Structure formats: structure tokens, C-alpha cells
Image 1 (cartoon, protein in one colour):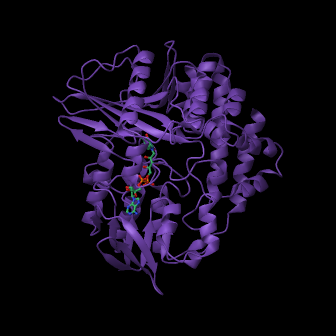
Image 2: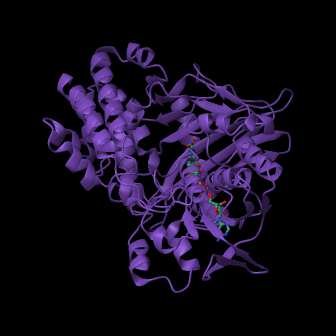
Image 3: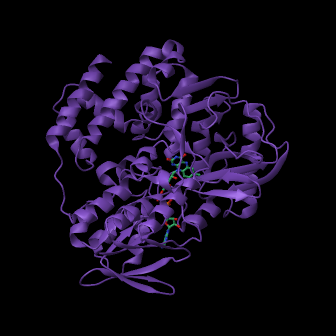
Length: 509
Ligand SMILES: Cc1cc2nc3c(=O)[nH]c(=O)nc-3n(C[C@H](O)[C@H](O)[C@H](O)COP(=O)(O)OP(=O)(O)OC[C@H]3O[C@@H](n4cnc5c(N)ncnc54)[C@H](O)[C@@H]3O)c2cc1C
């Protein structure tokens, strides 16, 4: 079987690797001159900087099962899922271990434990469906159960409300909101409730960073792919896909390749534009999907130093820290972003990039800015200005001057991300809003693949969504190998059983 994979982000590479190892003749087309997509590490002189994704807890298990260690990928685990530092010096730490977390939450300890149990059981229930359920199916599963109505309502409420119901301390609430919002959905938005449950549901999971930076994941995936006989073509944007009676022809500006199967990992709306004569029904369905509804875009700032700065962030060196001056800043900042303005008091994520011995140091900052500014288009200059504000804000919150001893600042804003990904720069490809989640997000096994047996899709715009997981790449590759594009029926009995578990937790609450 000849397969063309479109996009060498981690999802496309995971899918390509599984197919190549199963004997398929795989060609990966990547429009950029580097593989990785949102995973973007760069060696700048002596210093390794991160420009994209930081935390790898969601993919560490898959990386192990794919044997990527043999291709140079070594993970170092850390004990914090998330940590937040506020301007008044307060901090909240969320460890992988629930009891360790609870021990630091004072009067909210028992309330948080119950919240974590409730969150865990809700996600278990969602996981139990054989294919991602639509929200209508979740409602149908929960509705016969006492308490099910209330549990379902949690998904529809704003994350802020869900969190405020669960814990009382303003700093703990704000820390949970910051985590809830990192999928680019404001915690005040109705339907963001599920994101309020993400951090509490994550205890017991793993948190990890690759030795040598995030790019070690891409390098290992490419190495493994090539060892399995696959090939990666860089700087080769797919410009058109022409369906054939059997398979398709994939076109770039310079070349054409006849294949039996296409696995696309790019934004499905952009994929649709590559396929001429798309039936109106499918074109309409894909056209109704959205990105950028809350006008949120990424801004990363990569700082490099000859001598690493000593950030006053104790605990865990590899963990990602959220910084925010006051607990209420996030909600206000995201409203400003929606209005096209830079946040007046930006929140940011902070990471300290581990370097080899004898080298300098680097700090990674990640914040949000408007996708569309209300005062004109983004330029390199305005990206730099926005980056400067983030460095100032973090320096103030941490009471540590990040400008001191700085060698180089590299800012990656909406303009940079748009070019890097050949898209609007959304790392989730589609908004992670409730109308585009679970079974309402394009899935690896949905009904369209019965009409186009040669075409499969994965990537951040496909269920389960963005983040480093490899999940949709695995699902799509396995479906191709199984030759099974038929819709699998939802396993309602298992779903129901899990829903009872969720209900028991709810009653205890
Ligand atoms: C700044 C930042 C920080 C993040 N932090 C984290 C984190 O800490 N932890 C976490 O889990 N997630 C994080 N994420 C999210 C995560 O990195 C992404 O959701 C994920 O990597 C998306 O992977 P993907 O393979 O689906 O898509 P992408 O990474 O978007 O890859 C798609 C690829 O397709 C290519 N492409 C597009 N069009 C074409 C075409 N026509 N022809 C050929 N190639 C094409 C693009 O160039 C790109 O390489 C972060 C994202 C960003 C931007």
C-alpha cells in the first residue's frame, strides 16, 4: 500500500511511522523546511531555545510504546502537572500525586479531592465510548441516572463557575482557571466547563520533558520513520489532491504522486480546499467548523543567555509555571484579547530550558495575544513589542529582571505561527469549543470515510484535539491498517456502566 501523509507535525509523523512499520510505502509531505509543526526547538549558537510546545506528559507513554528511545528520545519525568505564581508571592502547586496536591491547598483540601474524583469519573465515562460520543449521546447516557442531569450541566457551564463551585480560595480558583484556559477557550465562556475539570482529572498521570528539548520528539519520530523505510519531503506543500477511481494523486508545485491512501494531519478545513469537487454536503459541514472565534493566538518568547538566570521557581525545574499578577487578570486579559487588544496585565507560562553542560541558558515564555488586532495587521515589530510586554510582566511577577544578561530574544507571534504552520496559527487547528468537541469534532472513523475510503485524517483538528498525544495519528493509522472505515457503534453498555461510576462520585459530593 502506498500512502501519502500530509504534514510532519507529531500527529502526521506518528501515523506515518505506524504505517511504515506495517509495511506501507510512506511519503510524508511537509510544507515547512523543518518537521515538527508546533513542536519547535532551535539551537541558537550555544543555546537551545524552545519556541513551541513544552510539556510532554500526554505523549510519553506512546513514545515508549513506539520504542523511540532507540532513536534518541529520553524523557525526564517531573512531579508537577502545573504550578502557578502570583504577583503577591502566593503559589499553588498541582503535583501528579493527588494527595501531595491536596496537602498544599489548606481549607480547600477535601473539596479539591472530591472535585478531582468527580472530574476523573466524568472523563472515564467519556473514555468508555468506543467512538467519541456527541454531546447528545452523552446527555442520553446520563439522563436516566439520578444526578446525571447535574453532571451533564457541568459540561455546559463556564469553567469559572464549575471551579468556583468546587473550591473557595481565590488563588486556587485562578490557578485552575489558568490551566483550563490553555486550550484557548476563555474560562468565562459557556461550555468551557469540561476544561475546568482537566487539571483535577489529570492527577495520577505523568509529566515529562525530553532531554535535549521538545525537538528530540520530532527527531526520534523522523529517525524511526526513515529506519522503517518511510521518507520525509521537506519544503513540499501539498497543493491539490485529485481523487482517482482507486486512491488519489497528491500534487505539490513540482511533483505528483499516485497513492492508494492519503492521511492528512492538517486542519480539515484546509484539507477540504485541496480536494476539488468536494460534495456540497461535506464542504458545508467542514465550512461550518471554526477557528479563532475568541480571537486568541499564541505568542512565545524565547530568551537566551550566556549565563542561565536563576528564576525564583523552586520545586521542579522542568515543570511549566503559570504566572499571573492578580487572580482576576486572566478573565480581563482574555476579554481584552477578544476586543483585539493586548492584555494589559498578561498572564504567561514560564519554562527553564535544560541545557548541556558548559552552555548558556534559556527561558521560554508563552502567552496569548489577539489573532486580529483592532489597530491593524500583525508585523514583526508589533510581535516584538508584544513580546517585550510579556517579558516585563513576568519579570515583575517573579521579581527577577529577565532583561539582565539577556543575549537574544526571539518572539513567535501570530505572524510567525501562521507561516510556520501554513494556517491561521491555531495549535488546535479548530477551536476547542464544546460545539466542536468529542463526536462533534471530525473523527478518525467518521462517516465521510465510507465515501472516501482513500482519505483519512488526524491532527489537532480531529478528536481528541490539540496537545501532544499522538492519539489521532495512532487511531487513523490503525483504522487504515484494519481496512475498516465502517462506523463502529457506540458501546452504550460500557458508557452506561461508567456513567454509574460518575454518578456515585457525584452523590458523594
Ligand atoms: C506555543 C505552543 C505551546 C504549546 N505547548 C504545549 C504543551 O506544552 N503541551 C502540549 O501537549 N501541547 C502544547 N501545544 C499544542 C501542541 O503542540 C499542538 O496541538 C500539536 O503539536 C499539534 O500537532 P499536529 O501534528 O496535529 O499539528 P501541527 O503541529 O500543526 O502540524 C501540522 C503540520 O502540517 C504542515 N502543513 C500544513 N499545511 C500543509 C500542506 N498543504 N502541505 C504539507 N504540509 C502542510 C504544517 O507545516 C505542520 O508542520 C503548544 C502549541 C504551541 C503553538
